[in-house]
Length: 66
Image (cartoon, rainbow, N blue to C red; front, top):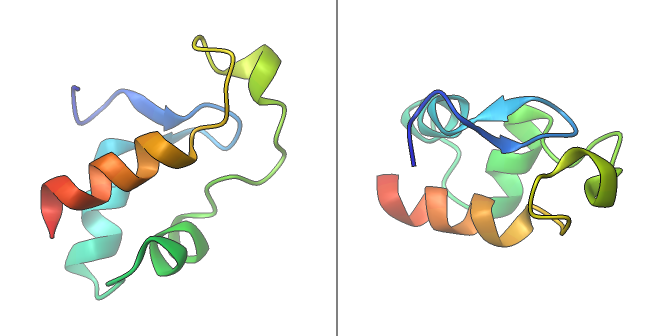
């Protein structure tokens, strides 16, 4: 996954946004979501090309940087 690609399409959150949240101290998935604003304005079936919720993608991105 490219750091500039969206992980959360509904809130336009990139992998780089997640990385920065972790660098800035967000040390759980929930804190990353709160710090980035991910998973707001959810309409995953329409916005996410996968047609599913981005939560698992956020978890995977978090694992990559922790």
